[in-house]
Length: 176
Length: 176
DNA sequence: GCATCATATGTACGCTCGTACACATGGGAT
DNA sequence: ATCCCATGTGTACGAGCGTACATATGATGC
Image 1: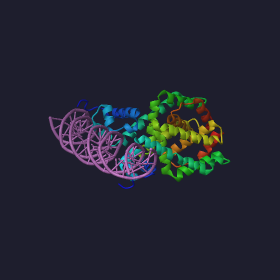
Image 2: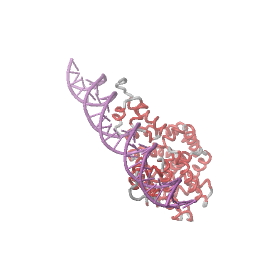
Image 3: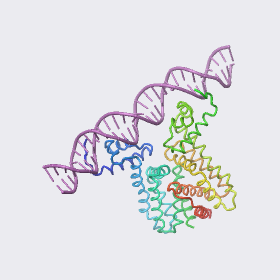
Image 4: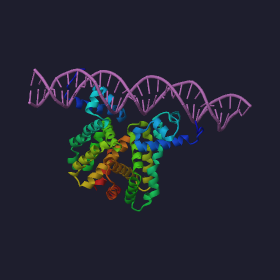
C-alpha cells in the first residue's frame, strides 16, 4: 500500500528484471517474479510493461550498455595494437563480470526467437560496429564483431576459459 | 489405447519435439505439447524423458547433425579454396533451410543457461573443429569455427541476409 | 478548488505446466 | 505356463502464468 507515486517505479522494475534474469535466466522472468523482486504489486509491472516483450526490450536496451561501457572505458579503440586491445577488453568483460556477460548474451540471443528484440540486437551490432569503424574499414569491423561474438560464444557455451593470446592472434589475422 | 508396444515410441517423441521447437521455439516445448504432436499420451513423454532437459539433450544431439551433414555433403572440406568452400556451405545451410538453422542455433544457444546441454554443445564444437583440423592447423580451425558462429549469429539475429562474398573474405583472412 | 487522468493496487479467472501415481498390458525369461 | 517388469495409459493436484478489470490516489492544468 505504501510508496504510491514512485517516480522511479519504471526504472526499478527494469533493474529488478535484470536481476531476476541474471539469477534465474530468461525462463524465470515473469510479471510476478519481477514484481516480487522489485517489491511492487503485480499490477504495477503489467501497467508499465503490458507484455513481457516490452519488459525484455527495456532490459536488453539497458544491459546492452554493459559491454559498450567496458569497451569505451578500456581505451582499446585507441590502443596502437587494436587486436591486442580487443583481446584485452574481451578478457576484462568475460572474466570481470561473468554473470553479467552471460545475461547480456542471453538477452542478445533471445532476439533469435523474439522478433521484438531484433531491432535492439541489430542496433547494438550497428553501434558497436560503428565504434570499430572509427578505427578500421567497415568490412573488417563487421568481421571483427562476428569473431568477437563467436569467441564469446565458445567460452560461454562450453564453459571453457578465455584464451586472450588466441583471441589476439585471431583478431590480428582478420585485421590483416 | 491403441499402439501399445511401439518400438519407435522414443524416437517419435524426439522427432515431435524437434518439430514443436522448430515451429514454436523452445519456449513452446513442454511434455504436453510434444505428446500432442507425437500423438501419444502425456504419460508417455514423461516416462521416456523424465525431465525436459532429458528431452532437450536428445533433440539437440539429433539436430546437431544437420549442419554436420551439410558440411560433409558439400565437399567444402575437400575444396581447393577452403575459404570459398566454407562460405558456400554456410550459405547453403542458412538459405536452404532457414527454420532448421534457427532451430539448431536455438538449441545450441540454450546451452548458455542449461548446464545439461553444455557437454553436447561442447562436443559439437569439438567435432566440427576436428573436421576442420583435418584441413588446417588447430588454432586456425578454432578461429574459423568462432567466425562461422559469429557470422551466422549476425544473420539470424538481425534478420539480415547472408553475404557470401563477405564471409569468404573474412575466412580467407583468418586462414592467412 | 476542482476536474482530469496517468499511475497504482488488489483480486479473480481460466489456462498450462511439471509431477506423481495407480493401474493396464504383454514380451521375454524361467 | 507362469511370473516379472519394462512399457504404456489416464487422471488428478497444486502451482505459476498472463490477463483483465474495478477501484483508489494524487499530480497537474485550469
